[in-house]
Amino acid sequence: MRNICVYCGSSDSIHGDYLSAAYQMGVSLARRGHTLIYGAGRTGLMGQVADGVLASGGEVVGVIPRHFLTPQLAHDGLTHIEIVENMHQRKARMAELADAFIALPGGFGTFEELFEMLTWAQIGLHAKPIGLLNVKGYFKPLLALVEHASSEGFIYTEHRQLLLEDETPDNLLAALQAYQPPAGLERWVERD
Image (cartoon, rainbow, N blue to C red; front, side, top):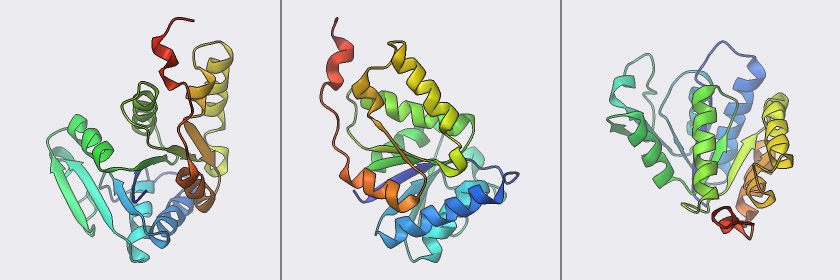
């Protein structure tokens, strides 16, 4: 597990604890020898996680749609940047490059990217680990929703096991490293 794709918010109008946690995630990624794959942004958690990696001597690959390639949005200090034509190409390229996925706090875009990777794992398109950095309990309501969906029969137990979570970067990275895909993932295509 070398390349880790991080999804996270780009807003600067957030509590400083989120920004600090993103920076620390970057430090932890670099210290463990991981390359960061992300959306090439310079603002919010996106900028902080990249800055943490870079300040710690690590490598950062950004993938950005051409229409976001502006001085206000694009990080100008990355190890490598790939320019694509649209968001679909961006997500596909980041997924292709990644060996694992982590979601930090974010909004609609972060949720959408996280759930696409979970869905792809559920239907067998990849077997890469997926984790949440649960800063300040940010994902607690989301995890409660997932548990509710599971208890109502919309998510099988083995599919719930696709999503790892922890409050600290090092513990989450260790859990991703130890991840083994749960047995029975193909059950969704069979009738019970």
